[in-house]
Image (tube, rainbow, N blue to C red; front, side, top):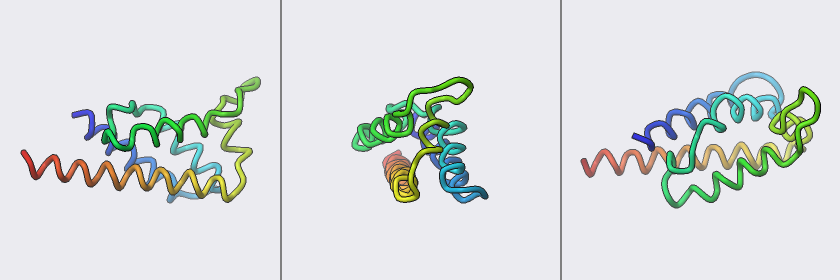
Length: 107
């Protein structure tokens, strides 16, 4: 059930985005506790490249000292960049939810 796992992790990521803190902090939590555990095969085929680009974008700043690359990246994002990544997470969630529903209908 790889798609189920992807849906579960994206669901939790969306919940992280709705918690307290700055958007950058919420994005960090969504990434570190959920997104990094998703493999591309846990997502609909048409969304795998978008997911890979998101992960690359959230890890683009190299780690330094005790600060990992996700923290280094998310802490330096502008509000607009952070909003864009949050929208991408929501879009991935919605696509996975839709694919999961189609899968259940076919079964």
